[in-house]
Image (tube, rainbow, N blue to C red; front, side):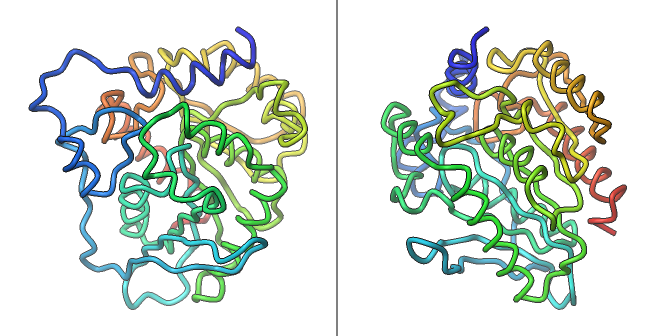
Length: 296
């Protein structure tokens, strides 16, 4: 499988429509009203909804090159110096699923922050066609992405977050971001990548100089990779390649591949959701951050 095809399959795997009845999905107007993207396909009626009880949560912004970058945060109320966990988005922008995940992490005791680093391209969550979305997100240079994440870390520290306990979690394209940022940042203690791509298309080389598998020898923080055996864009053989590259470089990482799961298995708003894999992966994530002293 070529890198170009890998990226295309990565996206199409997330947007497949299984044979479920209409009662299993929100109407388009309801999904929009709830804050979900439509570019990923139909939105499940039983998408997880996490409340803000015990949390301080909401929107803020931070100054970056090119303007004020919006971000969504959630943190335990009245807790001093919580750990910081960055939440790296899918390609669909800062929509309700990412905000809900941010609240879930806040309930684990962290100051969770999801920066909208695609903001320079407009409100991606409002784009309904994947063909209109992909050119925008593919135009994001890694150097700009890393600078946006650095600014997010500084913002979180200014809000009282613990600069010595920083983690990052990401999904789909955000999973790639986890691998990349854990190889470039001196601040991150550990990362968790949910089905993040490992080999970039050659056409992206100017904007994305090194793919995760190429940057493996430069890893600075341990990463947990969570993948699905049925992922058509990131097959298990590719995960094994990444594992071998990390082992050859003496870097710390662990992987778990879920036998019956495909791409987007944690995305509970999508038909790709696999409850058993998602729940186990969430526990693996929490344990990983505890192991590396990000979470208490």
